[in-house]
Length: 224
Image 1 (tube, rainbow, N blue to C red):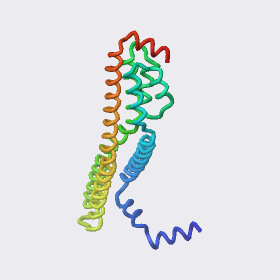
Image 2 (image 1 turned 45 degrees about the vertical axis):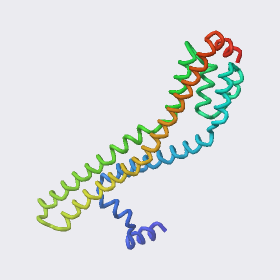
Image 3 (image 1 turned 90 degrees about the vertical axis):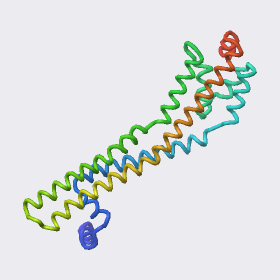
Image 4 (image 1 turned 180 degrees about the horizontal axis):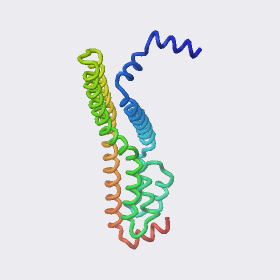
Protein backbone atom coordinates (compact mmCIF):
# COMPACT_ATOMS: atom_id res chain seq x y z
CA UNK A 1 0.00 0.00 0.00
CA UNK A 2 2.79 2.43 0.93
CA UNK A 3 4.66 1.51 -2.27
CA UNK A 4 1.52 2.14 -4.33
CA UNK A 5 1.01 5.49 -2.61
CA UNK A 6 4.62 6.48 -3.29
CA UNK A 7 4.30 5.48 -6.97
CA UNK A 8 1.05 7.44 -7.29
CA UNK A 9 2.61 10.49 -5.70
CA UNK A 10 5.57 10.21 -8.03
CA UNK A 11 3.30 10.09 -11.08
CA UNK A 12 0.98 12.83 -9.86
CA UNK A 13 3.06 15.14 -7.64
CA UNK A 14 1.20 17.33 -5.17
CA UNK A 15 1.57 20.96 -6.32
CA UNK A 16 1.72 22.18 -2.71
CA UNK A 17 4.52 19.78 -1.81
CA UNK A 18 6.31 20.61 -5.06
CA UNK A 19 6.03 24.32 -4.26
CA UNK A 20 7.33 23.68 -0.75
CA UNK A 21 10.35 21.72 -1.98
CA UNK A 22 11.22 24.38 -4.55
CA UNK A 23 11.37 26.91 -1.70
CA UNK A 24 14.50 25.27 -0.37
CA UNK A 25 15.56 24.22 3.16
CA UNK A 26 14.44 27.50 4.71
CA UNK A 27 10.84 26.42 4.08
CA UNK A 28 11.01 24.02 7.04
CA UNK A 29 11.46 26.72 9.74
CA UNK A 30 8.94 28.84 7.82
CA UNK A 31 6.47 25.94 8.05
CA UNK A 32 7.01 25.68 11.81
CA UNK A 33 6.44 29.43 12.24
CA UNK A 34 3.30 29.20 10.10
CA UNK A 35 1.83 26.36 12.15
CA UNK A 36 2.56 28.18 15.42
CA UNK A 37 0.96 31.35 14.07
CA UNK A 38 -2.19 29.56 12.91
CA UNK A 39 -2.60 27.71 16.21
CA UNK A 40 -2.13 30.90 18.25
CA UNK A 41 -4.65 32.83 16.14
CA UNK A 42 -7.25 30.05 16.45
CA UNK A 43 -6.71 29.73 20.20
CA UNK A 44 -7.04 33.49 20.78
CA UNK A 45 -10.16 33.78 18.64
CA UNK A 46 -11.84 30.94 20.52
CA UNK A 47 -10.80 32.49 23.85
CA UNK A 48 -12.29 35.86 22.97
CA UNK A 49 -15.53 34.27 21.76
CA UNK A 50 -15.84 32.52 25.12
CA UNK A 51 -15.04 35.73 26.98
CA UNK A 52 -17.73 37.57 25.04
CA UNK A 53 -20.33 35.07 26.23
CA UNK A 54 -19.26 35.69 29.85
CA UNK A 55 -19.84 39.45 29.84
CA UNK A 56 -22.62 40.74 32.13
CA UNK A 57 -23.10 44.49 31.58
CA UNK A 58 -26.46 44.52 33.38
CA UNK A 59 -24.94 43.01 36.52
CA UNK A 60 -22.12 45.55 36.39
CA UNK A 61 -24.68 48.35 36.50
CA UNK A 62 -26.36 46.70 39.50
CA UNK A 63 -23.01 46.47 41.28
CA UNK A 64 -22.33 50.15 40.65
CA UNK A 65 -25.78 51.02 41.95
CA UNK A 66 -25.17 49.02 45.15
CA UNK A 67 -21.78 50.67 45.71
CA UNK A 68 -23.23 54.12 45.11
CA UNK A 69 -25.86 53.53 47.82
CA UNK A 70 -23.24 52.19 50.22
CA UNK A 71 -24.42 48.57 50.09
CA UNK A 72 -20.99 47.03 49.49
CA UNK A 73 -22.08 43.66 50.82
CA UNK A 74 -24.72 43.41 48.11
CA UNK A 75 -22.19 44.58 45.52
CA UNK A 76 -19.75 41.87 46.61
CA UNK A 77 -22.43 39.19 46.45
CA UNK A 78 -23.43 40.26 42.93
CA UNK A 79 -19.82 40.15 41.71
CA UNK A 80 -19.01 36.86 43.45
CA UNK A 81 -18.34 33.86 41.15
CA UNK A 82 -18.86 35.95 38.00
CA UNK A 83 -16.76 35.15 34.93
CA UNK A 84 -16.95 38.74 33.67
CA UNK A 85 -13.43 40.25 33.96
CA UNK A 86 -14.78 43.60 35.19
CA UNK A 87 -16.84 41.93 37.91
CA UNK A 88 -13.88 39.75 38.89
CA UNK A 89 -11.79 42.88 39.33
CA UNK A 90 -14.50 44.55 41.40
CA UNK A 91 -14.85 41.49 43.63
CA UNK A 92 -11.11 41.38 44.30
CA UNK A 93 -11.12 45.09 45.01
CA UNK A 94 -13.89 44.71 47.59
CA UNK A 95 -12.69 41.52 49.25
CA UNK A 96 -8.93 41.07 48.75
CA UNK A 97 -7.50 44.53 49.19
CA UNK A 98 -4.08 44.93 50.82
CA UNK A 99 -2.96 48.45 51.63
CA UNK A 100 -5.91 50.02 49.80
CA UNK A 101 -8.89 49.15 47.68
CA UNK A 102 -7.36 51.09 44.79
CA UNK A 103 -4.24 48.94 44.94
CA UNK A 104 -6.27 45.74 44.91
CA UNK A 105 -8.25 46.96 41.91
CA UNK A 106 -5.02 47.78 40.07
CA UNK A 107 -3.58 44.31 40.76
CA UNK A 108 -6.77 42.56 39.66
CA UNK A 109 -6.97 44.72 36.54
CA UNK A 110 -3.39 43.83 35.63
CA UNK A 111 -4.17 40.12 35.96
CA UNK A 112 -7.15 40.43 33.62
CA UNK A 113 -5.14 42.35 31.03
CA UNK A 114 -2.36 39.77 31.23
CA UNK A 115 -4.85 36.96 30.58
CA UNK A 116 -6.25 38.83 27.59
CA UNK A 117 -2.76 39.56 26.22
CA UNK A 118 -1.63 35.94 26.29
CA UNK A 119 0.33 34.89 23.17
CA UNK A 120 0.31 38.41 21.70
CA UNK A 121 4.13 38.59 22.07
CA UNK A 122 4.33 35.30 20.13
CA UNK A 123 2.24 36.79 17.33
CA UNK A 124 4.39 39.93 17.34
CA UNK A 125 7.51 37.78 17.02
CA UNK A 126 6.02 35.81 14.13
CA UNK A 127 5.15 39.03 12.28
CA UNK A 128 8.82 40.03 12.46
CA UNK A 129 10.35 36.58 12.06
CA UNK A 130 8.35 35.53 8.98
CA UNK A 131 9.77 38.17 6.59
CA UNK A 132 13.24 37.70 8.06
CA UNK A 133 13.12 33.98 7.29
CA UNK A 134 11.88 34.85 3.82
CA UNK A 135 14.81 37.23 3.39
CA UNK A 136 17.18 34.50 4.54
CA UNK A 137 15.64 32.21 1.92
CA UNK A 138 16.20 34.93 -0.67
CA UNK A 139 19.88 35.13 0.23
CA UNK A 140 20.39 31.36 0.17
CA UNK A 141 18.48 31.07 -3.12
CA UNK A 142 20.58 33.75 -4.83
CA UNK A 143 23.73 32.15 -3.43
CA UNK A 144 22.58 28.84 -4.93
CA UNK A 145 22.02 30.50 -8.29
CA UNK A 146 25.54 32.02 -8.28
CA UNK A 147 27.06 28.69 -7.22
CA UNK A 148 25.24 27.01 -10.10
CA UNK A 149 26.66 29.56 -12.51
CA UNK A 150 30.19 29.01 -11.21
CA UNK A 151 29.85 25.22 -11.41
CA UNK A 152 27.81 24.73 -14.59
CA UNK A 153 28.11 28.02 -16.39
CA UNK A 154 25.00 29.87 -17.55
CA UNK A 155 22.64 26.92 -17.18
CA UNK A 156 19.14 28.45 -17.30
CA UNK A 157 17.53 25.63 -15.33
CA UNK A 158 20.04 25.84 -12.47
CA UNK A 159 19.87 29.64 -12.28
CA UNK A 160 16.07 29.69 -12.42
CA UNK A 161 15.92 27.10 -9.62
CA UNK A 162 17.94 29.36 -7.33
CA UNK A 163 15.91 32.43 -8.21
CA UNK A 164 12.68 30.48 -7.78
CA UNK A 165 13.79 29.36 -4.32
CA UNK A 166 14.51 32.97 -3.38
CA UNK A 167 11.15 34.25 -4.61
CA UNK A 168 9.13 31.44 -3.00
CA UNK A 169 10.78 31.91 0.40
CA UNK A 170 10.24 35.67 0.24
CA UNK A 171 6.59 35.34 -0.77
CA UNK A 172 5.78 32.79 1.93
CA UNK A 173 7.61 34.79 4.61
CA UNK A 174 5.64 37.91 3.75
CA UNK A 175 2.44 35.87 3.60
CA UNK A 176 2.96 34.63 7.16
CA UNK A 177 3.41 38.18 8.41
CA UNK A 178 0.23 39.35 6.69
CA UNK A 179 -1.69 36.28 7.88
CA UNK A 180 -0.86 37.03 11.53
CA UNK A 181 -0.77 40.84 11.36
CA UNK A 182 -4.52 41.35 10.80
CA UNK A 183 -5.69 39.18 13.73
CA UNK A 184 -2.87 40.60 15.88
CA UNK A 185 -4.11 44.15 15.38
CA UNK A 186 -7.68 43.03 16.03
CA UNK A 187 -6.74 41.22 19.24
CA UNK A 188 -4.59 44.15 20.37
CA UNK A 189 -7.58 46.45 19.95
CA UNK A 190 -9.71 44.07 22.03
CA UNK A 191 -7.11 44.13 24.81
CA UNK A 192 -7.02 47.92 24.75
CA UNK A 193 -10.81 48.05 24.92
CA UNK A 194 -10.86 45.67 27.90
CA UNK A 195 -8.16 47.71 29.63
CA UNK A 196 -10.24 50.87 29.12
CA UNK A 197 -13.32 49.15 30.60
CA UNK A 198 -11.32 47.95 33.62
CA UNK A 199 -9.74 51.37 34.21
CA UNK A 200 -13.12 53.08 33.87
CA UNK A 201 -14.76 50.68 36.32
CA UNK A 202 -11.91 51.05 38.82
CA UNK A 203 -12.11 54.84 38.59
CA UNK A 204 -15.88 54.79 39.12
CA UNK A 205 -15.50 52.59 42.20
CA UNK A 206 -12.75 54.83 43.60
CA UNK A 207 -14.91 57.93 43.14
CA UNK A 208 -18.00 56.34 44.66
CA UNK A 209 -16.19 54.86 47.66
CA UNK A 210 -14.37 58.13 48.29
CA UNK A 211 -17.75 59.86 48.41
CA UNK A 212 -18.96 57.31 50.97
CA UNK A 213 -16.00 57.89 53.29
CA UNK A 214 -13.09 55.64 54.19
CA UNK A 215 -14.40 54.43 57.56
CA UNK A 216 -17.75 53.42 56.11
CA UNK A 217 -16.08 51.62 53.23
CA UNK A 218 -13.75 49.65 55.53
CA UNK A 219 -16.66 48.62 57.78
CA UNK A 220 -18.84 47.64 54.82
CA UNK A 221 -16.09 45.60 53.12
CA UNK A 222 -15.31 43.71 56.32
CA UNK A 223 -19.00 43.02 56.70
CA UNK A 224 -19.14 41.59 53.20
